[in-house]
Each structure stands twice: as C-alpha cells, then as structure tokens.
Length: 308
Image 1 (cartoon, rainbow, N blue to C red):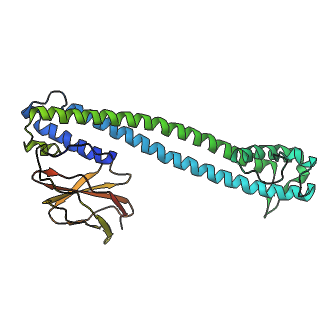
Image 2: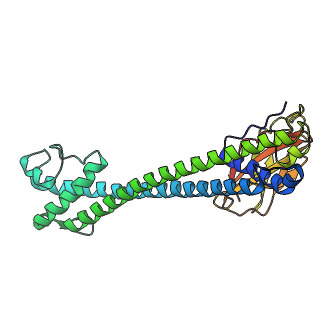
Image 3: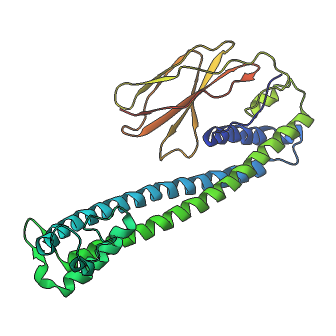
C-alpha cells in the first residue's frame, strides 16, 4: 500500500501543500470536499509561508547582529591591549594597587577573557583617561584616549543589546512559525483523511492533489545520487540515478532569497535536465521527485550550487 506521509523538511511540505491546494482548486466541487477546501488550504499555506519568511529574516538579522558584536569586541580588545602597554610603561607589568584605578579586573593586568569584563573595562578606561589626560596617547600609530574608549564601549554595548534583542526576536518568530507549520500539517492531514472518505484507494484523482493512490503497490523508488554541475552563464546541469519503476521526474528549484517555496521548473523522462536562465551568482537549490502512473516517490535530497 502506498503512503501519503507528510514530508519533514518545511520546503518539501510547502511543495506538497501547493499541489494539494491546486487539487482542491480543480476538483473540490466535483468530489464534494467540505471540510478542507481550497480557501482553507490556501489560508494555512500562505500563513505558514509568511511565518517562515519572517523567521528566516530574523535568523539573518541575528547573524548580522552577532557579526557586529564580534567586530565591536575585536576593536575593544585591540584598544585594551594598546591601553595596557601604555599603563605598563607607567605602573609596571605586574599587578599593584596603582592598577586598581584603571579598572583592570581580578587583580590582573591581562586583557580580560570574557566579553562582559572587556565591556566594563572599556567604560573604566574611558573614565580613567578622562581623569588622567596626561597619560593619553594620540599618535598616528597608537591612539589611547578617553574619547576612543568611550566610543568603543558604546559600540560594544549597543551591539550586544541588539544581538540579545535579535535572539529574542528569532526565538519568538520560530514559535510563531512552528505554530503555523503545525496548523498547516493538521490541515493537510485533514484533507488526506477527507479524500480517503470520498475517493477509492486507487482513484487517479489522488495524483491531482500531489498524493499517492493509497492502494498503489508499484510506486517508484526515490531519486538518488543527484549531482549539479555548473555550465555556461545562467546554466546548471542536473544528473541523477535511474530509480526502479520511475517513468518521469519532476525537477524542483528554489533560488535562495527569491523563491519562497520550491517551484516545479520542469518534468523530464530522462535522468538529467539542463536548467537555463538561472540568475548568476544566486544560490540554487534543486531536488527531484520520481513518479509513474501510480504516484510519486519521496523527494530526493536537496543539492545546492551557486549559479555561474
């Protein structure tokens, strides 16, 4: 018996949901769908796509915030190292009570090993050099001033707050995405169940919803060994193994940052496809679904390549 198990990867879920929505559009009146209509499917699918987009945007912003913290912290460490050399010339290499006013923590003259302590030290050095302007250095090769310490402290503090807010925002967006995904999965399972009440197990209309006939016993194996090769500008060549019982192959593509869900770019009968007109420099993700008259296999692994 064929299975209509929902795929785990969310992009594959969107692909199947789109097929199921198209099936509702074309056949819901004919077969008498009442509980899971095109409007219901489209509402839940669009909501999940939107929530996934918001989550991915938050993740991207989170990465940018993290990078900003790394840069600000690196600049702060470099300044602290320079300030330490200036202070060593005045107070000596080892810790003494003279160092206490500088703000170096833990009775050590070493650059602090934690980010929070480095941030606090930048604030302390700002105040120290403001109170001791005669110890400031401002030359083409080295700048150790109260003003620079303050600038670096503000940059690191601001970046860390933004990163913390970004983490919180990403976590909230994930919760919303997960809830929308569960709603969509429930809707899709509801439609499969309703179709099971309205269609025979070998009715070809199952295929119109992107689903397998539950009574089918001769489904193809899944595509394996998908390989992408760069061709001329804007062209990618795809090759894969020939799975048993497959008579055709549905090739799906998703351009990172362009396609919200995978798109069926072509259907072929051979184990290769030439994809032309792709945007150069973009990350292209490809997977292939083997099919025959009984239904279709699970999607292949997704492979990605930068378009030449």
